[in-house]
Length: 498
Image (cartoon, rainbow, N blue to C red; front, side):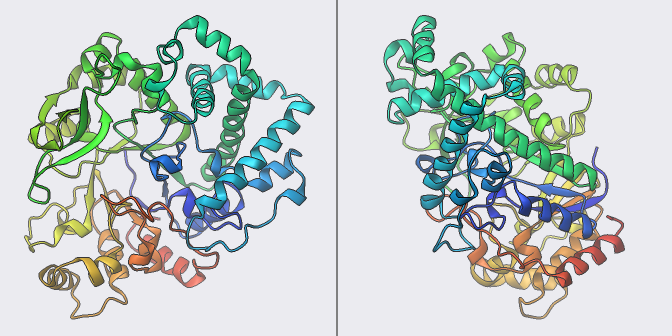
């Protein structure tokens, strides 16, 4: 499935912009052009789903696994469409160009989008909009209704809404939809706009030979349209609350395990309905991306389930998934199934066996291999097999320089230097690692842009287990120099990835 190539991991929010957050406008196309000029084959992004302050703006926690984030709409796109005047689009003042200013961005962007919708209504929403609504009705209708309901009830979780609306009584939903028709149309219009921008970017990437790699979280948020509209597919109790939470078992790093507070799937019901929810998630994802990374892939083989009344995950158990039936059903719908498994953490033999049988490539993280310098460690570049995605780090790890300078033990630091053939110093450590991965057998190698730029901990995207200052890093315009582009291009061509 994978071709030999290399690419860069960069979340959309991290692009430069005068409006406080990266978007799908000119800078996104410029970044794609940089990738093409440096002979890169891939641009990996984080989930594009809506995020909000209640979820700490994490792209892995959303009110919808089908919708896109309206904050990614470029204000200048609205001007070009004649939906807002140029005078409304002024750069946000006092915004750090290296940090997303969510507190300023959200009210600024929503005011522009509200104005754009009002103008579009006055002009007539147009046949293209209604065709978009018809084509995407399977998820769009529920999404727009859910957001409008949530806004109307002060963003309370759906289980606290009035019973008829909470329980999706057809008559109650019809009456609400009639009463709030305009607000529902507005939410659909936002999705129409951002889908247009994404399709423009995707088409541009296709034309210059850059493939887009998306990211699909295994589990969904409880307070989401996914659960509200499909509750039969999740293990909920009589009060419609999660009966169990997803997570990870205790290990040597965490004696209590991890409790994620995501509801778990009811695979028995999913199987009876031929996995329709998952089929639609995959179909939507393949509409958006060329390749799909499945976060916590092992959850499609077996998952750690903890009763919701437990304080931590130590009382959980492994639960199996109907693996063969699931994947055989999926393959009936998708002749080509271009996915990459995020197979990090506790991976049992059944997961490895399934990945091998279905020829699904896994993930290798360079930074995870230096606790002891075991020459057989699977994450050391000389051990990479062809069918895998190798990376220096992920959105959850520190940068190479940040790890070297702050996070690693003295022994890990010495192991890394020994493997890289260096005596000391961190100035070129990022390029040493990039070169090693480039020359490895792995078909795909991906580098966070922070490592290409040689940044330290100040550029970390996310620190797991914390809630502040995550998902905010951005790079300054001009940070990607001609020297960096040429250096990346040279290594890419040298090791047959161009």
